[in-house]
Length: 408
Image 1 (tube, helix red, strand yellow):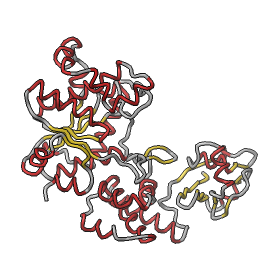
Image 2 (cartoon, rainbow, N blue to C red):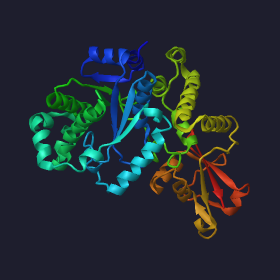
Image 3 (cartoon, rainbow, N blue to C red):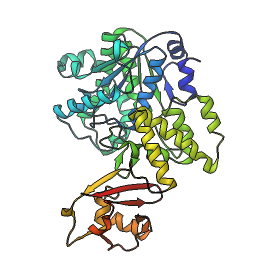
Image 4 (cartoon, helix red, strand yellow):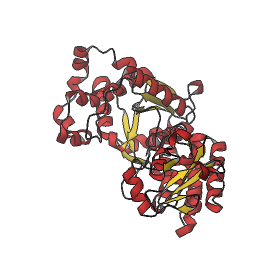
């Protein structure tokens, strides 16, 4: 089976500029393709991870990925799917974020011996001659067509700045530059990038007289169409400093029943024959599929050792409720106590389990908080140093979130 069929069978492909030609290219030729990553944070998140999985499938089939980091486009920010203009970042922030992306991606993609390429569009975007750029590139873009593009529609309602409107032209220019520099013939991206990708395909055709191709893949959403990868603490990050391997594992272990098989197809290399067998499971049997999903994704991102630790910690926690070795942990000190007490509502916030006291009150009144297996029913409840007799407490939020608080 060719890589085109692999991507299709796993449900990764959304739209293509020329299906017949793309199938032939992917199955019968070796090409260079690119995916762009704008450095909007200092860590990749699960949305990026899906894109990296596509790169990995393609690399395994002998194609050469180009990971393009947006040192230039990051100075503007992609308006796609945004109702407000992105915060402008400094050059230093952007460079730092790119170095973090590069380090994380090297765990998932083989960049040795030219098997993959890292590029930075700052190399060609930051020193452009504006008038020359307009003459060479801007002349090929219709403002009417740009404003009709999906990536601008949402922003038009709130006000789209000329600053942001340049984004599509710059991303299109990236494809032209990569085609010239590396003979890159295909751009891939999330389905929200379709308009931008079409812009690049058209620009290369008009400027170079060459046919190049674009393909988008499905966005990581739940069965209800909501974007996956968000928790109460924020995004599901790949950086272990921003989200522990245990919490990362637990996120995938707790996905909805309706989403687990799709996630196995999109986010693991598990053979489809095994996934089809897991698809037959129903009810509580689906927990087996969730465990496999959590283990496989954690292994890819954090390595097998961390995946095993997270799995053992989760199993011990659910079977006995006593093993806390790999549980996410917060340290507190005597300075956190007032008159020898620390309110449970404050403790929940210090542990990052609630964003506010109001949310903590709601959780307590709904019976969603336990400390050392004792349900907390009073919103004025507090803990004291004597409660830390064994050196720590375990807070249970809902049925699935466990957190260890250590008194130093």
